[in-house]
Structures are given as structure tokens and as C-alpha cells.
Image 1 (cartoon, rainbow, N blue to C red):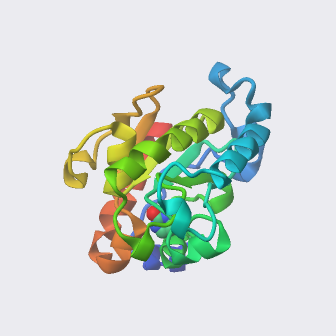
Image 2: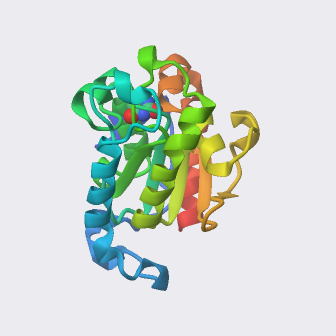
Length: 228
Ligand code: URA
């Protein structure tokens, strides 16, 4: 394995890979981005997201507001074609106010690079905007109170595909209680505007179970082929 991508693919546990097709994302500039009727009016997205971030920063809808250092709204391009969704901020995210900046974030960057994307090409957000104490699982009522923010983020970014990372993101976005195993490997429709949605493992799970990295790469390749 040679080339600039090799260390990232190795990090993903991939010893052999085949580049499938050029990625039509922002890397080469706007000329490669498909402009569709649905994407009209997106000039307002950055300011709308910033207003929403201000609302989130003041949110007291659940008890997590008492234990957070700060809210973690989301990051990335407000005009991204890809929108990735995680579960909830961890300790490092709570400290920095940004999603996926800890160890899981480093692996996420490697996952992205393995399919020709960078963090600048995507928008990333979590189901919960506040860190659950001791990184415990999100509670049902926290997901119910917080997920409207996520739905608004999605409607402002208007991505062309959503990647749900882990069970909580997948179940919240698809409003299902199916398991991750049942949800992986298919192209779902995001319930609000029928965007394609692909489910994959959470990077934190991949850190604990590196043998699943290949399956995760397959999920991202599926998402890529749907977008193409
Ligand atoms: N795990 C998540 O689900 N989100 C983050 O932002 C960091 C770790």
C-alpha cells in the first residue's frame, strides 16, 4: 500500500483497497458540486445555523445542562453534501465545544480520508448537544428533547446523504428500535425529507473492536456509491 492515503487506510485496518470513482465533493471547488433545485436558498444556512447554535447554547430542556461545560453544536461546511451524526459529546468535546475532537474523532478523520473526504467536506453533529455524565448512554427523554435541534441542523445544511454512526444516531434519525446489525448494509430514507441514510459503526466502537473497521469502510463505500 503506497501513497498519501496509505497510513489512513492502514488505520482503518485495510490492507488492500480499490479506488472506486472520483469523489464529487467540495475538494475541487464548487464546479464539481451538483446544484439541484432543493439546494436553492442555501446562502442563509450559515447564519441560520449560527442562530440555532446560540439557542442550543442556552438550552435547559434537560438535566444535562447542569453538568455540561458547554454545548457542542456541530461543525463543518454548512453546504456539505455529507452529514455525519454521532451520539453525544465526550470529555474532550465538552472541553473544546467541538464534535469528534478526541480519539474517536481521529479515527473518524481516517475513515473519511479512506473514502477521499476530509473534515472540511462534511458537516458533523451529534444527537445530544451536551455530554452525558461519565459518558453514559443517552436517555430516551434526552434524545426526545434534543433531537429537534438535529433535525433543524439537517434541514439547514440540506445534505445529499446522512451517515448515522452508531445505534443511538441510527435509531434517533430513523425512529426505530432496530439493532445496528439490522440497520447496517441498507440505504434507508431519513424520515423527514427522504434523504438517503446509511448506518455504520460509531468510531468509539471501532476503537474497541478494530476488526469491524473493514465493515465500516464498506458502509462508507455504500454511501459513496449512493451519492454517485
Ligand atoms: N462521540 C460522539 O458520539 N460524538 C462526539 O462528538 C465525540 C465522541
